[in-house]
Image 1 (cartoon, one colour):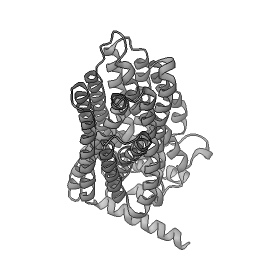
Image 2 (cartoon, helix red, strand yellow):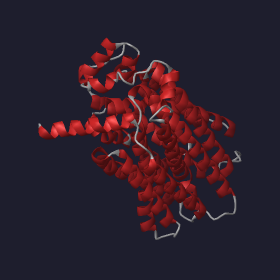
Image 3 (cartoon, helix red, strand yellow):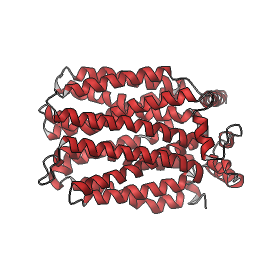
Image 4 (spheres, one colour):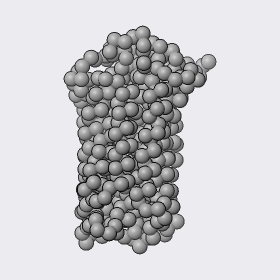
Length: 442
């Protein structure tokens, strides 16, 4: 049964909000580990060091990459809905195991499994958002859904300031298992992708979804780009008009996720090394996510007018400047403002990078394209985790971590600026402009 639930819920906006709720827990997971690291470093009997923390963060990102590759491809073959439900169940169960871990080994294993579940869910949900969002506001709708990602980070930072010092770090992971309660609702109301149904020859079912959710039937059909095998979907990524863009998109994802991983994993620890209290260090994480939300919202609105590419470049450039200024150790109030701008240039840039990447590929290959890009991008996250842990374990001044992140942000801006548009991106831009012009003349 591809479309279920009450007719009142058969609305594209409802699907976007639901996807945003799912992404919230991804954002929560990203921040929660960095928030508990200072507590784990002092956990009796565990011998938890910055190197161990870096290894766990890196291995988690490895399995996120594996999940993205596997689910990005399998969702194009078996449908988005099944992959969303399965990956959510796996992630939630792993969070429960993390909360009850008796030692470092169990903790590490559960984090690795949780990473696979999250990695599988991310590109699948992204593909659904881009398909159900109206063309004229696609970047804004995508960014709105990904506010869930930022809200998850804000919740993790806010809870960390209250919960960790009162209930301990385990309570943070119990809270992270709550998505398990959403499975019955998702099973009932989450629709299947009409583009996937079309590519599988299930035209009648696809048309019902299109009509019930008020979607534009033209992008769903995609007769010129429809492919029927996993090999064909992947081959398109490196075919004429797409190969250069795919490689450069992967590099942009590498830079973006290295920034996100470096800031989210190590910011609280770095700030405590700079003699801030744990409460202040967690407050910096809160500002990081608030800045990301505001930056992504403003950039997304402009992206629907100017395109996502120039806004990605702008956010990376802001990240470069702000991280560089933090190395000057400004007054606390100024540091909070700079960290907020860094949030826009790291987490905010990641949101717009995903929206831009989704527009590069036709719907039939979108899951594979995003999954491949995110998988390569996770290598950047792994590098950020390992390098950050190594530098924190050495005698090197912690500001060198900020120097490294500033350089990566600059590289991301340059690569994004030079990334060429694909045939699908050109068509997406034409559809958005035509839709905006039609509505403007009505």
